[in-house]
Length: 254
Image (tube, rainbow, N blue to C red):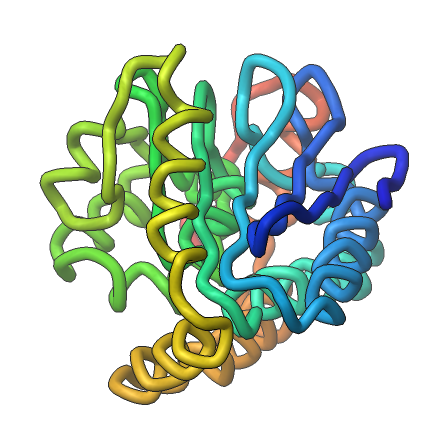
């Protein structure tokens, strides 16, 4: 079953959910809604042992729609975005995210919600939100559990991108492969999981999650901080407006 912007499929115990919103797979509210719907359809298949999250086109995702971050749209967009990330993070089976091209902002946060990441050697990850005077709520909640604290701080506080090899060394990316090998590498990893019983891999994911802080609750807290604290500042609103107006922001320094 497929939507217009997100496609889902299942075969031999492996599910797949694919972003298809060219050219940059921007995560609009419509895309996020279809993504959650796709996850819900896959969740209903108890024979699934693993799912692959991937994207059509030249890039995995350049992130969320900045226009939907501006008040008052953000009051609905941010909770929907957090709900989408949490739905992937808490999906009952293991998840593999296959990344190519740009994986920025909300796209990077989507990758962080997966259990395993396979990326091409040309893939670029980044959290550039701070350049607009805002921050990535899901990354702030999930990065500390995926990479060393210093790497998390660098990604969030500089806004500068990192390559797939950089993040392989940091522990976020499991496999780095040539672009032509991404599909085969993701499928090979999925098949290594899918050969096991559905009950055991689902229980394994629950046990692995039980050993860390409650990232689901942390996602909710980060989303509330984004709306109730950050979006009340002049700089957050100015940064978003400046991006949409294609000009340099004039920070208030307050």
